[in-house]
Length: 358
Ligand SMILES: Cc1cc2nc3c(=O)[nH]c(=O)nc-3n(C[C@H](O)[C@H](O)[C@H](O)COP(=O)(O)OP(=O)(O)OC[C@H]3O[C@@H](n4cnc5c(N)ncnc54)[C@H](O)[C@@H]3O)c2cc1C
Ligand code: FES
Image (tube, rainbow, N blue to C red; front, side, top):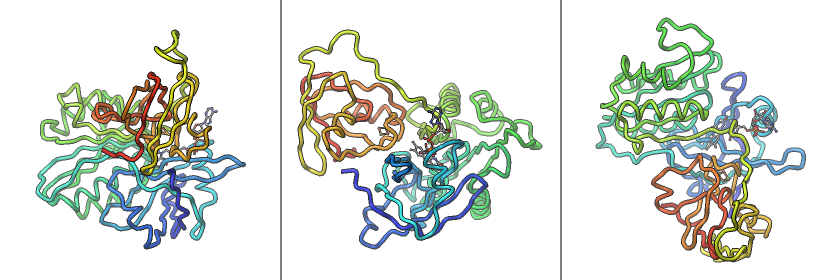
């Protein structure tokens, strides 16, 4: 079910002092499996000091580029990103799960849209894919990107963005916001916050001209920008968010004060690759993912923290309660999707379908 494939690395480029760009060689028999949409991410897996370590990395290439590429920024003290930055070389092999995620909107050559994007640090990776893909696929659409960094030396994809600006002079507007390097326009100094966005919306960008806004970066930026967009009249459904959650604290499940109604045990049925398998678990002791893994099921996951959506599935029968959710949008929850790593059964029977995507 987790379907990792050992992919050979064809190229590793040092993009900044703290970030590498890794290109995978996808053999022809896996081309279809690794076909992706702009804004999707890969789960990479390795073993570090005997531990199975999995992390999500967004694809940074455009769909039309026909290459599979991710950028990995070193998180201070971070297990996977440090390992990747220090050891990955061309010819090495990494376990990679096929592309996942829904951080995008449908494209059409007939669209005449104006998209807005906010990125901070490595949050640029899915946005580069989205911006490049969109500008190529929609010849009448425009993109404006606000990109926050400490200084010019830390900007990931500085050259590629500059090339993009040269190619799409009239359709791509790029604004750098720097927290530790003075720029001429005072508004572009500091961090991207809700207050700064309010000033952007007054002086630089008319929100009623924007169709969709994309936000990718740390949690505080994401909330600040999203709140500012909504306060200035942008509907929540027009705001797409991807959280890069290296900083999310691990949530600890708090058992219900009263036992859940019915029996204490639940019969969980998993539908994976068309097969139905069932097991019994206690309702309030561990998540469905943990219980399934303990029972030996090959369930897909990465962060186990409600962030990456790798463990996303649809509730077909019964009900689960989710502890936290940083990954699913309101429309996905309305359609019955949940994160199995955060789900605790609330009924005596639960059926979860991992094969459904929409
Ligand atoms: C959908 C998605 C897409 C992503 N795309 C990208 C991308 O394109 N590029 C990218 O670079 N990243 C991306 N990320 C983030 C990435 O998945 C990792 O979270 C990131 O690389 C850090 O992983 P790590 O193993 O290096 O750090 P971890 O070992 O997970 O540690 C993260 C941070 O927490 C600190 N920490 C660890 N343990 C403790 C502890 N016990 N107490 C206190 N602090 C601790 C570490 O020092 C570090 O700063 C994405 C995340 C998601 C969810
Ligand atoms: S494993 Fe990341 S959200 Fe569940």
